[in-house]
Every structure is written in structure tokens, then in C-alpha cells.
Image (cartoon, rainbow, N blue to C red):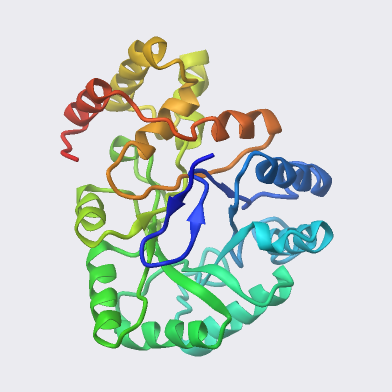
Length: 322
């Protein structure tokens, strides 16, 4: 069982992390907890949620955090898992009201600790950025949370490379830890998918690639499986008609993976995850699974890398250099 060290931390994580945005929504709470059990049984240890996850479903606020907190309390395995959650998301959902003041961040953090029923969050993400705000007060606030013992480390989700550099430069001057990871949408198809409706959700780019190589922070991407696009296309191209990933370049990438699949012996999903794991900086893809079969398949990507000739072909199609 392999582990990836998140730079500038003492966090050693299984190479695949589990996202639980829809736990208790896509299936029962019992099924969701069974999925968490299976994740830990297979060696997984980083579980990723957020204060707002599943708030878009009527009936209960902060459902994802609450279910994860219940599971931790019931199983009594807090020492076996690393809990990541996020604050600072615009609220109400769908609004442009950014919430990154120290008071709002503290409200979110304290709420998360209460819902999760834990004393310390291992990795705390800022869910969004407000480029109109100076980075100083934000980093001062996160550092205070850290010194108070409420969080162990902090990271940036949907922050641009330039803002992450600016924030970490400020942190370095003051002896702070700084952001230890970045989380944006990243998968094999993100470079050439059709634009999404939420402009505050950032996609990976050559600028992010440069950031990770130069700064050395980890990438913990969401949508790492491209919503199952490549696997679904293998089953039947009709299944992905109208899918935002179904573009000419991504069809070419799919053909590249299909031609190499026999040589790798991997499932299509594992090929997509192996692409991320083949980079020369720490990458821990987040997977979202509805069934234990899907989870087992994703966990099977542990230790997988794509052959160099496949990476070269992919980078040629994407016009990237790694």
C-alpha cells in the first residue's frame, strides 16, 4: 500500500482520496457509511467534504459533514483518517456573495467542527477566492486557526496560480505554513471540455502545471474522473452525446487510451486516474463513487502510471510539456 507525502506537512495519504459531496443523497446514509468503511478497508485515509456539500438538496443543511461526523463517532477511527473540509463558499448557493472575512471564515470553521464532531480538521480548504481582497488578512486568519489547533494545514480550492503565489509569498515572509495544496477541476478531458456555468470553478491549465513544478505544492483535484466520460464512451458513444467533455480533442484522447489499454491491463477509469498519478509532483485525485464496485475500481489505480509512450502521445494531443 503506497502513500504520498503532502509537501510541507506531516500528512501521508493514500494516492486516491474519497469525495463525499453526495453522501446520503445518491443512496441511503447506511450505503454511504458502508462506502466509507470500504474505503478505509482498502487503505484509503483522506476524506474530502465541504460546509456546503449537499445543501442544494432540500431537507437538511450541511448533510455531508454531519454524516461523516456520525460515521467517525460510530466507528471510533478518527486516528485512522484525515478529514478535509472547506469554508468560504458564496452563500446562499448560486449567489455571488463571497464570504472570506475573518468573521465569516470563523463561522464556517466552527460550524464544520461542530457538524463533524471533531476538534481539529486535518486539511482546511478555502472553497473560493475573492481577488478583490488582499491576501494578508486571509492568510493571517488561517494561520490563527492553525495556532489555535482548529486546523492542522490549509489549502486553496479554485484559487488562481498567481493568487496562490502571492498568498504563499506573504506567508513565507511571516513564517506561516502557507497553502500546501491546490484543488481545481483536473482530469484528462478538462483542457478541451465545453465551458461550465460557474466561472468561479477553475480548471487545470499550463499555468497550474508550472505552479506545481515550481512551488512544489500538491494537487488534489476534483472531477478527477471526468464524470465517467471516458468509460461511458467506451461502453457506447451514444451515452455521452451532449456531454460537455464530448469534444473532438477528447474523442482523440479516448482513442489514445483505448489503443493503450491492452498494454496497461487497466480499466478505463484506472487509465484516467493513472494519467494524473503519472505527474512528477504529488497528485492525489479525488474520486466520487456511488457503489463499492466503483470504489474498488478507483482504488485499484494505486501505484499505476501510464507508459511513457502513452504520456508522450497525450501531451502531444494536449500540446503540454511535463
